[in-house]
Image: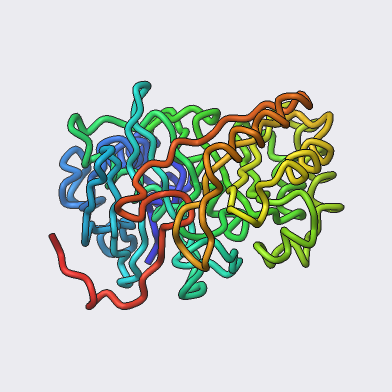
Amino acid sequence: MLDILSMTPEEISGLIMGHPVYRAQQIFEHLHKRNTQAFAAMKNLPLSLRSFLEENCYISTVTTVEKHMSSDSTVKFLSATRDNNLIESVLMSYRHGHSVCISTQAGCRMGCKFCASGENGLARNLTAGEYCAQVYNVANETATGSRPRSIVLMGCGEPLDNYSPTLRFIELITHSRGMNIGQRHVTISTCGLVPEILKLAEEKLQTTLAISLHAPDDTTREALMPINKTYPLRELIPACRHYAEKTRRRLTFEYALAKGINSTPSHATALAKLLKGLLCHVNLIPVNKARGAFSPAPRSEILAFAAILQENNITSTIRRSLGDDVAAACGQLRFFSIPSACKKT
């Protein structure tokens, strides 16, 4: 059986050879614009074609199991895949529109010490269709059912550890016959897989690349992020410079500030030195309660940290934490492997 939600119009056309090209376009629009979840509901297709699709394909779906509303209107979704893995997605509301944060894997194998997503390890990669299904499921939950303004691949999993489905998702979600999200409104977050960053630089995409950095030196970063042992800063930062030069796109560096770990003035000075001359922006994040005994740096330390970056011509912002009261903030999303533990709402 083929995951038709992961297929391009050209691939669908090849699948249904003998039918006019416009039939493939109709199918694609049903899937990616109308969020039609059953072939029988595609009434503008001949019955014979609907029967063929039913026999040979399936439509990736995610089904909402639980939904939690934060006091700041952020909504966290616990959703079940077809094989009953449970993943989390988040809908965030801003003045300029909605943003959807989706998962790219059922679990994660990166093992970052401050992140809950890898607590149960990696079960499997998600398909591009399951990426799309999360977006469409969350979009349907908005008051108007409208498409989101932006999408961030920052939920459970490492997007570049699932490279091909990540690229296929971008192709599908930005397609003019589908949801038609602009590439510049899609953010890929990575903990720093150097070969994939270099590969991504050659793809000629206009997406935003966000690097989870969280420390300006190898000793501190290795204690927080095991991936640094494989790809230390001496390899990661040159790869980032290459990416910025090749794409002419500004990188974002995510930096979660944990009290007593990485938030001192000396850390800020070292970070400014590390990023000097690089086309980038630093997103400062008070670390959220997730794994380990990490506490967020106090506001005064964060402001002092930002001031040092500013003095060294490194632009930064302090991210407003959204959804932390329902464990929907950065680092708090999880993968659950025991569906029976959850009840449908």
